[in-house]
Length: 231
Image (spheres, rainbow, N blue to C red):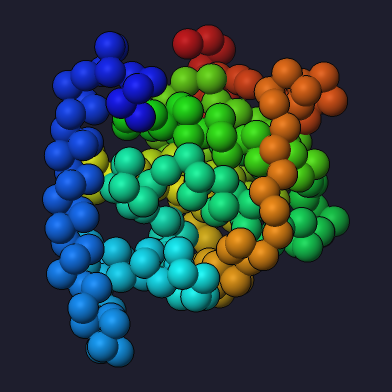
């Protein structure tokens, strides 16, 4: 992260680095109890999240999603990395590949907010989805989450992906899943996607190849969502 953006975003990168160091200190606080077989409380705090991420990296099939809103979130540069985005996107692609219906197409909508690197994380997500044969409608600019929900339903997509961490601090980013009707992924869907983690190799397609195969389309998602002619 620092190498790619130290010139134009040095201040933000420094903050991310500091927050990542703090997260590593929290990780040390939970390693000993986990090694001893202790169970941590099921809350939405950073300690519980880091404990699950540690197990996830070890290959266990435990919760990484917030089941209430279909969202995986983590500290940027710590556990929210391009590598992990690819793993979660592949698991998501595998799950929805089996969700064929008469009213949806093999299509995904991908949007992102203004958080650090959100647009790059969104592009990484679409590279995995197109690599798995999905048509992807990718936002060409930051958008609010409801815009992705609206387009997901309108486009008859199997799901929508929003790169955001909602109300969480700036050091976090997330991967929010919207179902074909635009609502959040339910706990059963999240658990099923988690079961797919690291089961299959990640498939990717570059944007150039995806556009040649007519799998990738970028667009401003705001005008139709806001019912405006131009923006």
